[in-house]
Length: 182
Image 1 (cartoon, one colour):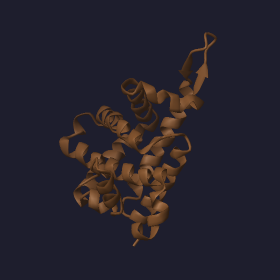
Image 2 (cartoon, helix red, strand yellow):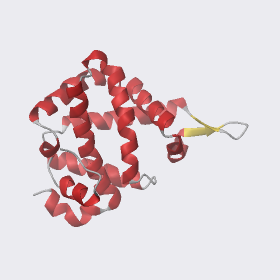
Image 3 (cartoon, rainbow, N blue to C red):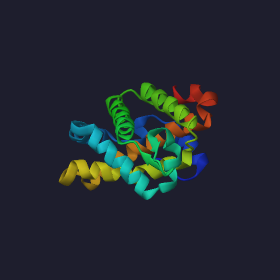
């Protein structure tokens, strides 16, 4: 399950429905764990982005619109803007969880999200950097409920999200839309 590092394989797998990536049991696990995560979207989202920027400092440049410049010329994150963005990302993740049963709607939502991120110079290869931060955020929020099975279910969901967003970023969906939504 999930995308491989081979771009041809990724293109093939991204044409599949969400149930290719997640089993029914994994969908149940994602939904049950999301109920806990959803209790505090701002804190979880902020944790995820803080971890992302700790691990991948170079990605900060893509988020300049969320920063303020100090008198010394240094750029620092505006906490309110960053929390707002992080909460929005978490709400989008909630929409993904809500639409796990409707691959067509879910896929189109992710492709459009990929197109939007492309306009911010986010590239498909960059999506891999977000998974460790999401995993850490889920682990922080779920505590001992974050099991190996929970991690694997969320990883499979993230693989699907990454594939579809990559389609939107690269424009592959425009030529293959009929294939994606058979």
